[in-house]
Amino acid sequence: MQIDDMPETSELATFARVVEAKSISLAARELGVPRPTVGRRLARLEERLGVRLLRRSTRKMALTEAGALFYQRARSALASVVEARDAVQRADGAVRGLLRVSAPTLQGWQFGELVASFLAQHPEVRLELESTTRHVDLLAGGFDVAIRASTDLAPGLVARALGKTRLLAVASPEYLANAPAVRAVADLARHKCIVGYDRGEHPATHWPLVDGGRVRVEARFASNDIGVMRECAVRGAGVAMLPEAAIVAELESGALVPLLERKVGAIAVIAAVYAERAFVAPAVRAFIDAVVEWSKKNPIHRPVSARARGAK
Image (tube, rainbow, N blue to C red; front, side):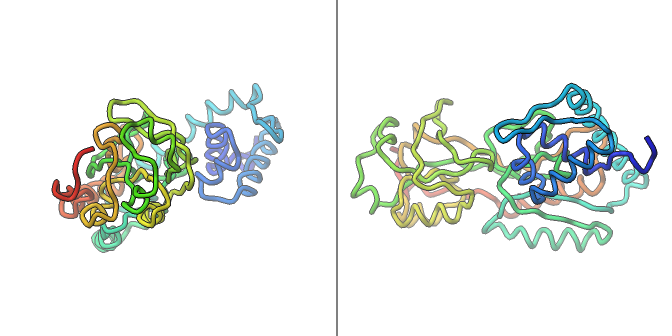
């Protein structure tokens, strides 16, 4: 194989993400590129190698024998590329280069102020910030850092905690006045619910229970936009599962009422996460340190006064 025919890093990363997502469409969304781009990268990769890597049909996709072997080598190659990049960037300890960050829209947290301050402090850094609730694959997507709220952490990631917030089931007084009573977990089955997206990928079908279990819910409306979910709940569209940090004002004013606090819900940790590796690029470390310090001055979670709610 000539040097000109060697696979590009973007092709390797795309192939790895398609294999892990088991879907070209899902891989495209996670990589933040159009679906046809993913298809072209796969076709170009197979053409360069001269072998079929994936068997694709309208219903399913599977690795060929060659594809399975190549996938393992591709993951190792991608890890080596990252290590090589980090080795160059840490040579003189300077904070420079491209830094790619994935984060949800952090409403009310003045995140733009943090970004502007970081760029002013590190003029040699080029920063790309993608706003999404999807839990992107850092390596395959080419991201250095992700800020996410989660009740668990995927293997191979390191997390720096920024704050915690409770997930609460809430509804408006107007909705509750005209809906069946909610006195037990089983009562949720009689309600239309407003749900978010599990890992930012697909509508949730279950809500967490305080004791560690789950309860199935029927979604009337699903969205990965917390602001829209909050507004719909306030306007009486149904029972919603929302982070307490996002509904402080509504709980204090009584526009939303918490339900089954001792039975339904969970603690979500908001954290800056990055891939676990021997060496972390100076720009990555500097950004994470900046986010952690910023979170201390701008708490993501503010407690709701006990007077504003009663445990149910």
